[in-house]
Length: 252
View 1: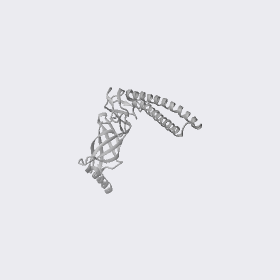
View 2 (view 1 turned 45 degrees about the vertical axis):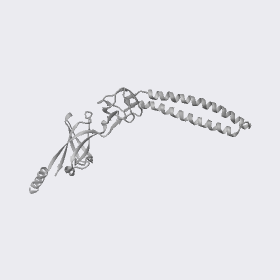
View 3 (view 1 turned 180 degrees about the horizontal axis):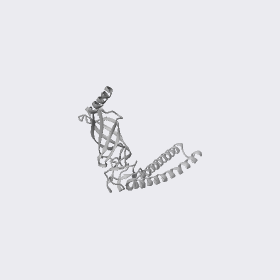
View 4 (view 1 turned 30 degrees about the vertical axis):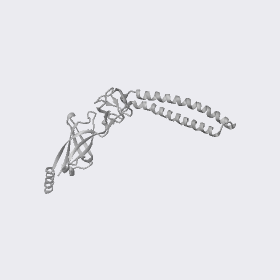
């Protein structure tokens, strides 16, 4: 009887010293991609809007090809000029080789013509390489989604100049959603990586269990808080930016 009373007493004491730590949180994506162009040019068309869900390979926007068209036209013209020059030099070079064998021209003249022949041959190879490079740039005019996701920001308009490296569209990967919250430094001793937590997303009346994946120091040293990243079971209604609550049972 005494053992039962002792057990009940310990259980009650443990309950008195346990409490719920409730934290405000939000849904984030661990894989947000900033999409930008590789080529400069005017934006010809935009196929998506903010809030659209896209699949990998979906055409996001297209850049006008006029810049590359002009460069390609010049490259083709250069190749034609170099090709004609090369054919003429080649013809003379072959003739001089035959004349040299008959000792009718000097070795110096033959070497000079050979040098010109090799120079034009290399110039023609470089010009063809530039043409191939321009042809490859056409595929970058159609900017496509690198993965499935949600368009959360669009910073471009039709008719604007697309600049290489400048953010155009941001895609949030819905398959890598996490819960992010901040915990006070004083409460840090009550949690550790791998702990189970309760998660509630009020806007869609969704409740589930999560697990602490990482504990990260805040980038602001004056905040005296640490960031918790939490994995959880998702459904298709959950989107980045949703408000969430995290409840952690702790014993003091």
